[in-house]
Length: 88
Ligand SMILES: [Zn+2]
Image (cartoon, rainbow, N blue to C red):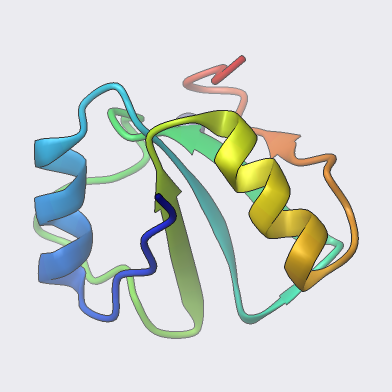
């Protein structure tokens, strides 16, 4: 199931509850040029920062769910991959 947190707390709670999950970092209005796939445990994200605002997050337990989401919102299934956590 795809989850779109609306607050930083929701985002951090989801990551804590889904350590094997994945997320896409994107603009509030998703664009093809900025869809970055991360693991929920990516060191990019710290619990003491604000994450939901200009950049939104969409989370799921499986990468495939995020590819379906991306194809729905921007018509693409290709996601850029974070170089730090190397999600796939
Ligand atoms: Zn990452």
